[in-house]
Structure formats: structure tokens, C-alpha cells
Length: 311
Image (cartoon, rainbow, N blue to C red; front, side, top):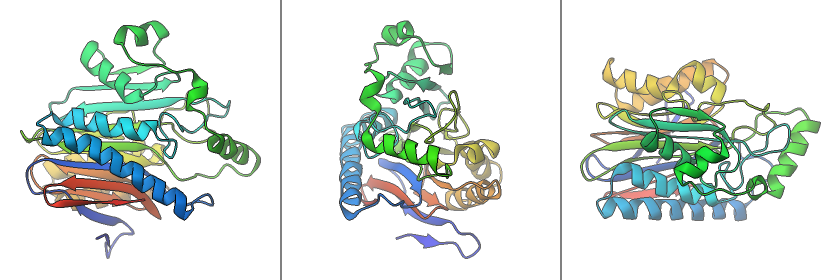
């Protein structure tokens, strides 16, 4: 179902229906890595299916798009296979420091960066969006998190043995970019409204306080009812430099490009800044696209026309 462009090393997959409810998810892009096994791939695909089940059931019940996005992300944040929530990558000082963003097609958005005790960071992003007059909180206080009614865990909850090993290897052997396990979802509900959400643990061995593209509206996450909902994954610095998610929207809105062409062209811009990764894009009207310029991408979608997962 994936076809490589003749002019770009981007794989693009059409996803979802022309109209009606659709849910598209991703759980990281990059290279397979030395820890990839048939058993782990099978677990990833199982978790992707569970995330689709959770979000799509809400869409079928008539829930708004952002509720489906949150439900799907919850499943992936709770899975240790992915770099978000439980299983987040570790910073250079050995802690989990997580980011998330939630945006709806009406332009309302909330985000957090540097949270270290929020069980599901997407819930904190939602709280910022719905309970404050602000857009982005950096390392919110325990009191603010408690006031928002968001569940917490000690930082040890998020740390897995696999992530400890990844950090040790990064600190002793070159610190190359590894597979980016950022997770995200975009959805369209029965009313045609769209939403996007992204959650991440960042990059293994990142410096304390580093912020990637995921919590930055327009970079790793964006939604505009006039155009598209977008969630990105990859080397965040490159996605920030080209304002990737917003660039896709602008290409659709102002240049009249198709969703497919806008995603491919934007990933070419990411590649020009020595970045790789992928994105999921869903318009308010029409089929969505899953595009990536890396070796692989964990992905899935579901609509009335069917669906798929790829781990």
C-alpha cells in the first residue's frame, strides 16, 4: 500500500475515507535498530491495534475528534514499546522528561514540555488547552498539575530497562540518532471536525531542558479546520526549522497542493536540514496520508473503508 515517490525518497500511504470518521496514528519513525525482533514488531502492532480500537470506538459513538485522539494516545503512552509516557527516552541525566500537544481544528491548543511526573502527558496538554488561558507550560509545578486533576506517577514509573540500556549505549558509543518513537494521532469525527495530538519522551541522551517539535504548535502538531490536522515524528530539530506541520497546512491552503504532495514536499524540506521521520495528515474533507522518509514507521489507520497497521 506504500508507494515511493519517483522524485523523493518519501513513502506515502493513502489513509482513511473521503468523508466520515477516520483515525490515523503513528508511533515513531526511523531505522529498525538492533533490538528489533519479530516478537517486538508483533507487540508493536498489537498495541497499535489497541490504540485504534480505543479511539475509533469513540468516533463510532459520535464523540468529538479530540476525544478519539486522546484515547488512542493514552494506549500508546501506557505501552513501554513507544517513546512516550511509560517507556519514554531518558535525558543525559537519566530521567524521563516528556512533551505533549493537543490541537483542534478551531485553532485551540494546549501543550506541555519537560513534564516528569504526569502519567499521560496528553492529559496535561488537554488541561492547558481547556483550563488555562495559556498555550504552553514548561515544567508545570506539582500544584498546577494537581489543580488540573491530572494523574501523576513518580519518575521511576516511566523508566524501563530498555531505555536505561539505550542511554548507556548512547553515552559510551557515539550517541547517534536512534529510532524516534514519538506517538501521535489525528482524527475526523462525524461532524467533520478534525484534531491532532502528539506525545513524546524526546531523544535518548538529550540535554536537560531540550525541547523538540512535538509540543510546539505548527512544528510537530497542528490542526486547522480549513485544511488539515498533522502530527509529526522524527528528528525534532529539523521539523522545527521548517515549521513542518504548519508548512503542510500552508501548502494545502495557499498553494492548492494535495495533502499527499504537501506532505512529501515538506519532508523533502526536513531532509534538507539533515532530518528524517514522518507525519500523519488528515484533511477536513478527503483522504489522509501517512508519509515518511526514514527506513520505517510504526503506523495505523481505520475508517469505514477499512484500515491497516504497520510495525
